[in-house]
Length: 346
Image (cartoon, rainbow, N blue to C red; front, side, top):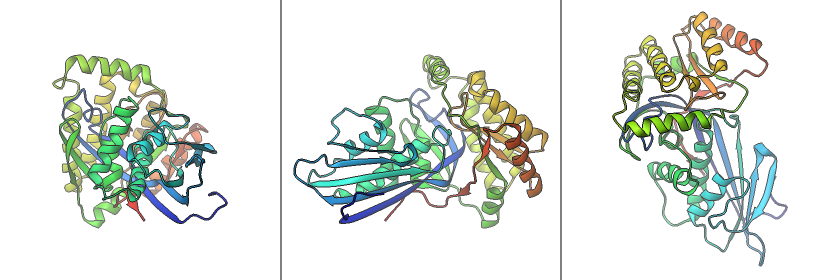
């Protein structure tokens, strides 16, 4: 709930998360160049900004992180970030005029640490909304670049480029990162029948715990950094993006499933712990049920989520979801819908 006083204006925005990021790990600084295929989906990250007339002497920014049950007030961030660095750094980056007092309210139905680019979706939605308070208007690509820059330059985090692009653009995309962090984005347009069929076959399984695998990631990055952009382990990942794109254009779901499997195997080849025992259990159940493909979302690790591509039988899809959820009380199917649009601000 907003502050008791009446806002003079309310700005709202939403941005989708992403799944099935075939080619992930090649969108990073140490890869240098890469190719990524991903799918933007609902549930969205949601942002509301309530604007007020500023009172003299007050801390002008209120942050309401609804998922965490936290609301707190801060002054203008100046390189020091408190409880939610991503939110606070985005506010600093956007340089909102000092005479404006506002509350930022953020919510996402996707669990934190789901490996579906939720933080990128939050950042894109927040930058898009804050952009309405500054002169001019940023393009989707500029917003994606800004969101990625905030994570890598201001917060010094390891971060590729594809999550932010998926949230800003929406839809299904083939991303050609020709020189980090610059990329061309090619939206994949398919007939409605292919779009609807893909949507009906996809399943997102959350493993019930956030992915927390920083030590494994550090080992992988150290090895890939030493090998450089021509690292042999990266090339199979790059290839899966083109295979995914071509399969979808052809309406060939078996080929798309094979690309997902190839990507997951190439991901495991970077380090076996990038697919933990929970990932492997869900994958084994999907395989036993006759699923066409599976993808450990994001960078992988000991938690997060798995995307499954089922065959055309909806009853088998529902039976698989039921079996997975009954196998472990933490596992949960997250309903998803393909998002034709990316960032929306009004």
